[in-house]
Image 1 (cartoon, rainbow, N blue to C red):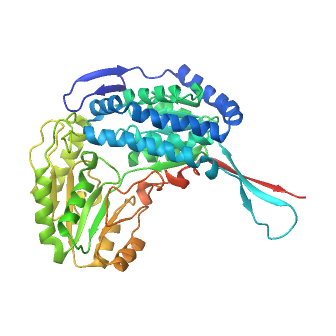
Image 2: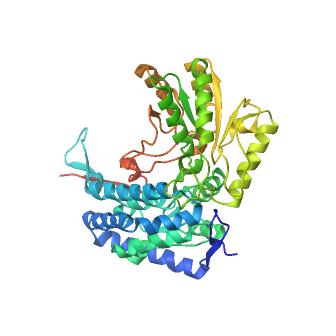
Length: 456
C-alpha cells in the first residue's frame, strides 16, 4: 500500500491510493515556492490576497456536502460534525480576509529621543511547510494556511497519510479561488523527505499539528537549521467542576466536551475533576449520559460519534484502556470494541502510578477524579505533562477567575464548551507545544516584523 491512502475506518475498504512525491518533484515544488515568494508576495497587495482567501472560504461552504463526504470516508467523522468543521473554515478564511489590512498595517513606535520616526513593517518571511494531522482535515489547514497566505508566505502543505483526498480538494479550492499554483502546493512526502525540506535554506519555517513524537522530531530538525517553528501537540485537558446552578447542564457540557470528533480532539476535555460534594451525582448522571451515546454510521445525520480514525488508533486506545484497568482503574461504563467502533467508557480510581494518569486518551474514554476542593482541583489539573486547554465550571465568578489564573494551560474556558472562534487564539504550553494559531496572534507567527527607523 502507498504511504498515502484513503481507507474507510467504518468499513475497512481501501478506497484509493495516492503516489508519494518523488525527490525531483519535491525539489521543483520548493523552487516554485521560492519563486512565488519573490514574485507573488511582492506583486500583490494585502487586499488582493485577502479577496482570494475569502473566496477559498466561500468555496468550502458551496462544496460542503462533497467535502463532508470525503472526510467521512477518510477518518470517520460524523456527518453533522464534518459539516460544522467546513463551515468553521469559512469563518477562519473570512476573519483573515476581513482583518488582514488592519493586522498587517505598519505599527508606529513612539520614539523616546531623537528626530524622525520609526515603524514596524510586517511582511512575508518566505516559503513555509505545514504538517497537518488527520482529525480535522480542513480546519487544521485553514488555521495555518489562511493567515499565512494573506501575509504572502507560500505554503507547502503535507497532509496526514490517511487524508490525501481532502488535501486534493483543498488544493482545487485554492486554484479555483485564483491563488497562483506555486503559492499553495500539496506535497505527499515521506517523513525523510520532509526532514530534508525543513533543512532546505529556501524554507523559512514549519508548523506542525500532531503528536508529541512528531513534534519533537520536527523541532529537532528545525532547531538544528535555525528555523521558526510552531507546534500544536496533544492535550489531556481538565474539566473542573466546582459548583453549578444546573448540574444536568454541566453534565451535558462534560459529555459534549469529551465526545467531540468521537473523542479525537487534542483540546477535548479528558480528565473530569469534581469536588466531593458534587462527585456522586455527577458520576451517576455523566455515566448514564455517556452510556447512552453509541457509535454509529458516520454517514448518518443522527450519528453522535463514529468509528475511530483507523485500526491503529483503535488498537492504541484499547491498549491504553487494558493497561489502565490492569493497573487498578475501575470501569464504570464500558463495552466491547467492534472493529474501529469504540464504546464510550468512563474510568475512576486512577492513581498517580497508573499510566492512565499521565497519558492522553484519544477516543471516547473519560477519566473522573474526586477532589476535596478548589486547591486540590488545581493541583490535580496541573499535574500533567500537557498544557493545552482547560474548562472551569463554577457558580462563583470570583472562584472561576482565581482558578483560571492558576491553571498552567494555554486556554481556559469558563462555564461553557465549544467556545472556539476564528478570532480566538489557539495553543498551549509544556508538552502541548508552543506558538499560537487563529486570531491576531495566529497571523504574527510567520511574519518579518521589520524595523524602519528614519531620521528627518
